[in-house]
Amino acid sequence: MRYMLAPLLLTAAPLYAEGLKVVTDIPATQSIVSEVLGDLGTAEVLVTGAGTVHDMALKPSQARSIQNADALFWMGEALTPWLEKASEGRTAPTLELLGIAGIHLIDAGEDAHDHGGHGDEHHDAHDEEHEEHEEHEEHEEHEEHEEHEEHEEHGHDEDGHKEEDHDDHDEHGHDEHGSVDPHAWLAPENAAVWALAIAEQLGEIAPEHAAAFASNAAAFVETIEPLEASLSARFAALPEGLFAYHDAYGYFAELGLPDFTPFAATDAQTPGAATMRDVRALIAETASPCLIVDAETPQAMIEALEADIDITIVMARPDGRPDQSYAEILGALATAFEGCVAN
Image (cartoon, rainbow, N blue to C red; front, side, top):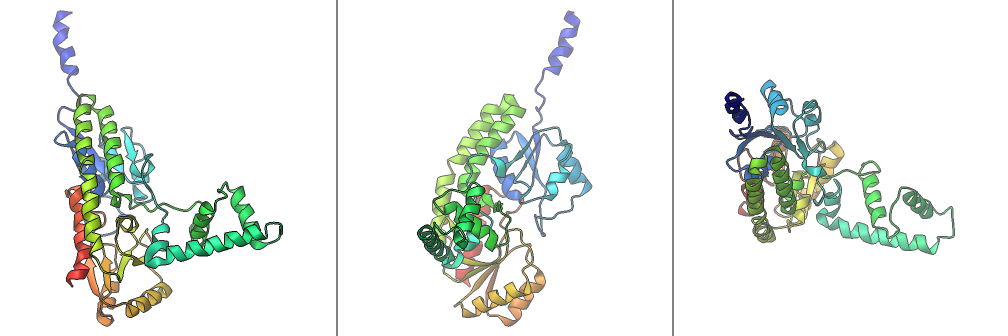
């Protein structure tokens, strides 16, 4: 039996001695995972260049990477629906970041409601309607009473806030359950929660490195509060009159980004002719307007706007660039918005 000891010891060596190989959906996810991994693995990113993160055709090599990765970290179907099917059949762990408990999420229309100050107007109007409803509660055929009963049947609270959210969804074409704004990495507080969850997941895969992953995650969390303070200070210096093709910056608005008017919804669908007419009218009424565009903005639209409207156009990458750190991704976005002032 003693001659079999050496082979047994060899098989007991750490399975991940050469480092973990994980796959991520976008550079923002890659940046957080890389902070936690440190030098104990590599994080491949699928979305690397121009085009939309919402609809991507994978290369065969990328499809293989997804299936063979020790772990897959992605935002979720709300951002990259194509990855749901591509990851089918995986046996190794997969972590959907938008589904992790404890993160801060906003509705896909919530940020749009608040742009340009419309959020307060909507809230006031809703309060008036709710008061009227209470005054006429005894009239069962009253329209608002019927709406209220419908909310009650769907489990909404009586304080009116859930009703407001439900009305918002209907008004903007969402289904009755609403939808999440998937650009949640633009809330640094979420990145902190994710880093800890990623460390826990990696520690389960490679227990021999669990302490290192936890230490790396803790160090990353320590950078979040100063990053938030820096972004808030930079946003405070920005002017009004901002426009964005992609409604991706609702979480930034919570850090003090001035009100802005989006062209397209959070899924970056091309806006219709009526929407473009309305936006053009707003631009014409705005002093020194500035438009933030990204890789999903149709080039023809940019050229058309530049041709007949006096507007500053600045390019941004809300999902970041491959191999940037998390702070670099958010800092580059702040720099893009500051380009509106520089021009």
